[in-house]
Length: 287
Image (tube, rainbow, N blue to C red; front, side):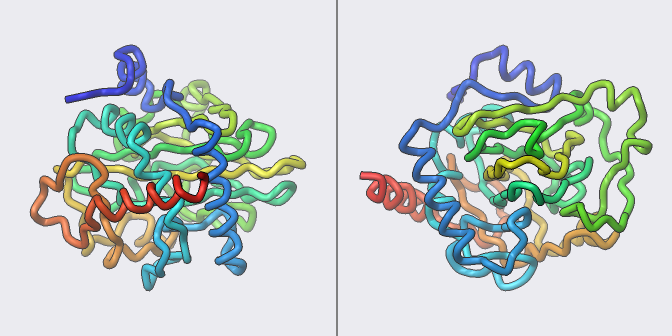
């Protein structure tokens, strides 16, 4: 097994549930990703920019908030150095990209994403997964950047509740009161420069505040799972049942970005060569 992350970063990921690894985009990769972001925003003028689900799919997923995406976003999510970093955190040679979401908080109005655990929304069994968050703009506490609660991924599922909040991009989440002072004391801001990435576990408590600043905050969240896990297309997630985001996973393509699929129950697999072609197309656009 080849890991691209040093041992101390992997140890920190296991302990804290998140890291800012030593890998990042180079200048050309960042420029290509920003162009792809612009394409997705232009193709989906009526979609809230904080909820651009499946931005890596050029077509439409059919249901469940899927948008008209860009092959350039797929190229980003299948970039080998990012894929290897996610695979290292998950301890696997076989990795599936199962979702990509753009979070673009406009200056002065970008909605908050309150405290939550991603696993409440994800139909993966067993639930071993991570998100690699790629910063396309500077991401800081002042413009609605990510905050995480270190170590919370080791607590299992923490009960979420439905709320009505017009300034929030989700409606099933955790409040400060529900988390309590001991957990909140372990809160950390994840500050990133453009091109840097962070990786966090599916069960870590995380969130971000409203962007009241004069600067946009945009990033791409790439969701990965070990190819040994089962992507359950028939499963209604907790968040769906409780009235949160209604994400239809029945037609979601799965892209094997490293190794091969190891679970025969997984369906709707997109061949790796399609993502390779996407990367080549993006590289050609830069050249």
